[in-house]
Length: 614
Image 1 (cartoon, rainbow, N blue to C red):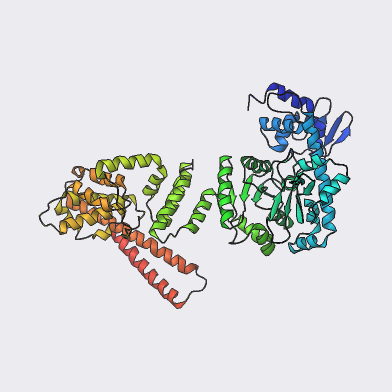
Image 2: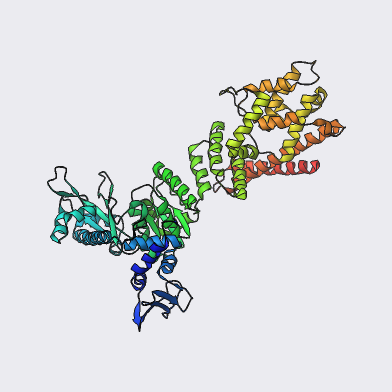
């Protein structure tokens, strides 16, 4: 953009902009001598100290010290960068940003005509509304009072093919420009024009300078299409504007801004005290709209309908806002409701409670995927975790990523190690191919009917103990004979260790002559198993037990003790969870009371047993 916003354009912007006129659009100025004064828009004050010099084209506040030229003012008041402020003013003055350096007076003139046509159309639609019982009854049914009706400038397009056309023609406006404003269309046979908005509640779309740039129209019944919006015109581009932003600028403190889907959502929220919501304009959410949200709210919220379409749209908006550097939060509505429905049925306090339960990007992805997949089912857990891993892979903060890995691991029982490797994506896929070529060198066969144990999050000491015991059993039958006295193959909780234990126990039990096992034989057996992690298999196979203590029997006893101690801790954790679940129940029956006492006794016994292992 630097090669477009050159010095000539900046000079043109300065020369064509009148600072007094521009500042007057944002605050009231009073002439005092050769200067103008008013209340500073950048800090709270009761005595005017904000001064604008018409001759010097500079402003200065003697209260807070802010000052500068027209570009500085727009940067500050609109929260724009220097380049954005120059573009803002260039567009306002009709200065092209390309090679042409002349102000396009024709474009400025056409834009002014469309603004005037839209303003007159809005007046006409408003008059129709207040004099027509049908749309007034509809607004009354939606709890929209007259004050709010006036604040949004609502109107009504009559059920006529040429109502607005005749009115504007009668006011002296040329049909060419009425068409350019998007209010009428040419008939297919070229015999005349027809009104594009008919028998609809009308929503004027007003920019932050108070100009009407377009319209939205809603039916009063269940006919389709439900909404019709103005086409893009010289003054209106759907993807560059948001409905209700003019009132957010006027009333909001810009701490929060809520993005909703529809005009009525904005109006209903405003009607109930939420004066900081806006709506996209019947088009897919854009990067430019994301910039507007960022500019007008420190905290950005998304509150779309709770249906499937609303959920999908929410995800798209989250992705766009995240790219823009915004950290949005999602307000989750009950199933089948939109903001309009919810606040009218439940009121402001209940809506504010939803604000306290908002979800960030990752939390929302977890939430919707929990609805999509059954976490009580192994296949569902795998699909859920793979889906969330894609989201976690985009996180830049290692701490944030680690926190969510812990959360997903705890909820699914899938090891943190496995989730981390899933997140690694392509690089990890390359590692898997390398280790599969080295050890297994084949594709896994599907065993859909075979249910393997769920991967469990194990303490590092427990996992190390299992891996070491597996390698000891592979190495020497004598070690196997000792270990099997204390542990069954089901006692190996790690997914890969359990698979190996199955093979080891089977081989030794079916052949008394075996003194040890060959790694290649075991790896051959693993071909039929699904979802085996070759990195873990590799670690076990490469483990050098020659470096272990000479007294292997004592070592085995210690490792078995570690596993038993860890399992007791896991059992204790499960009991505490169940106790907490029963305690949280409002209505407890006799069965709950009995179970609670039994669990408390079991917990006491476990605590004693754990102490004996220390």
